[in-house]
Length: 340
Image 1 (cartoon, rainbow, N blue to C red):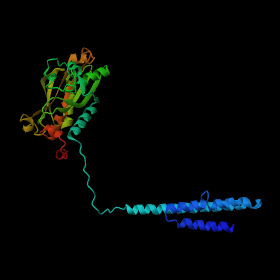
Image 2 (cartoon, one colour; image 1 turned 135 degrees about the horizontal axis):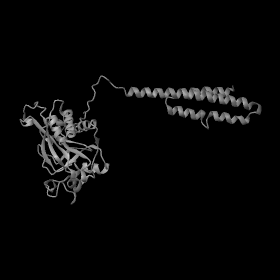
Image 3 (cartoon, helix red, strand yellow; image 1 turned 90 degrees about the vertical axis):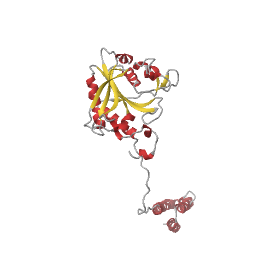
Image 4 (cartoon, rainbow, N blue to C red; image 1 turned 30 degrees about the horizontal axis):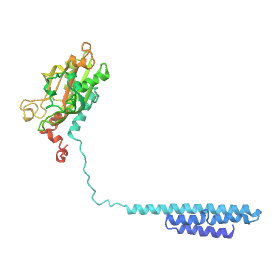
């Protein structure tokens, strides 16, 4: 090999190995392997050489270039490793130091009961549907058999937005909307959601609360089907030993209507403050769908029948967790929420 090329190889290799960081290494690379570097100068000598020497000299220059590129790559990998080791050392943790404690979130009791109730009904084959929170008087009242003189339609009881629109006072309007949308039986749905009424907040009332509406319509649906569904729900929600009681009641959108109570799961139906010493706790209302409500939803009551029920999620939460004031569910007090 040409002595000058040998000297160039030695000098360049020494420069690469002497580089203390990537910037110095890149500077050395530019000086020797760059377009205007020392290797480029050697390639420029080709035109000065006799034609019979150009081939061998060119091969020698390319060999030197290849060797220098290998030396450069090796030194770069070494510098990268050194830099990584320094970074790791700088970030080294003292595992003997105590860790930092971060607050852990909790699932709100309302959300717990909501999810549990939905899962119970879904296991029985119910689909989950939703409806708008801003409703018309037709869906919220008229289609559900609440006539113009019904006290629930007074402005002192409902939040009206315009003359015929309001914040829904119940999740029952989803019954009509679902029947209209489906068009024909079978229908088997629940509709959980927020509802609104002009109630002054106290221990048992809130202007915003939550309900689950249930609806089943098909040929041959009877009160026996309603009983079977709600008894199963009560057992799953409050315990296998809970008994259900059905007593006559009145709701404009069901006929016949029933009020459902469960045996007090707190005292075992022996009598306590939670059940007002009766051994029973009222939890929901239900009934067979009124024929006119079926018609309003587009179904023929001579061909199909159905039942509906409404469950207060807030009330379920109060009962299940022994909470004596509904306002606690909405105050976002961490001392209260951290108990769940």
